[in-house]
Image 1 (cartoon, one colour):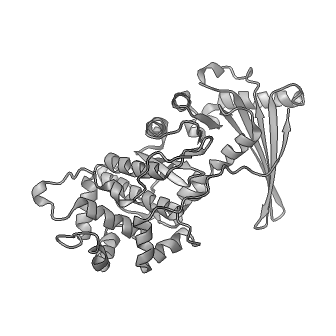
Image 2 (cartoon, helix red, strand yellow; image 1 turned 120 degrees about the vertical axis):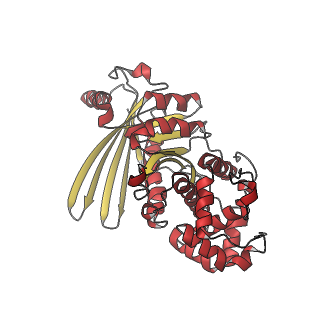
Image 3 (tube, one colour; image 1 turned 90 degrees about the horizontal axis):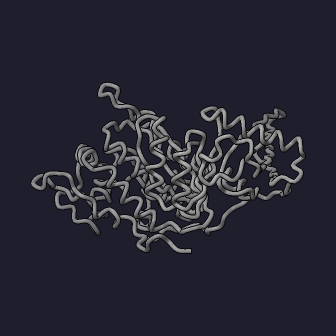
Length: 394
């Protein structure tokens, strides 16, 4: 395995950012402000006031490696500078750093999904809440990069833009039903990746055809059909859940199959959950280019939920992202990137603490904060996890 590039230092990747301020009014060095902001967010700061206060509190520590010609900037200076900073350029530096960390893993699941920052709107200025589309590399435990769009329906245009910025050759890109579009599947295949797309009402005809294909296969008891099944069972926290992952390579029922580049499988997940004596059942359908190996399908379908459980949940609970009231169009997007930087670094640190407590420790322990800022991350063991299961071929 190899990383996309070799320089894994965190703060050094942001030195190349162009400073949009008037040269005559630059009292503070842009790169140093970014270092302070990254350190502050790592330690629990959630806005410009907290970032500036953290910088002042730790000023003596920062002076060991920053010049700080006019001390630590005030909170309104942080706000103005990050409002002037080009989000696309800031995100590009973020992606270069992530590429330095990321190991190239054939078959890695890259989950793509959107998230709205609920309180980032400014109705008086006609500014809708910020909506970010992000990608999560499951085995690398890394957010690969966000693309912003104001309206959720624009995910259809944002996802291809995001994919163009990522190295996805040999990977499996998973997207929920919003991204089940031929113009999203095509660039994935063109870039050498595979896709697994969920189906819902936005593709009602296709969803009905996939369901009918599995009904036909049931009627034939899968005899002679290219098909596999994986069943998994999990117990814990008073809950029992059984999932049945089923693939089918018979595509004759799909009327517009030629429009989907690389399409070679249909997928179905039937789940049964029992909790407190109550049983619920759910069936979900997919299309993909990953072939009919049921273990691969199961890993990809389960891996997609990592972006909800390990990214969106962490941002909401540990970083209180939905409570952020930063409303400037550029500043709110740049602050979201700071949170992604902190999340990636904290998730790739082997200290036996949760994200929230790691942030507390970083604020208390300067040696730990130095490790987070200047030492290479503790990268996870790169294995492709698969659920334990029984497999049956059709």
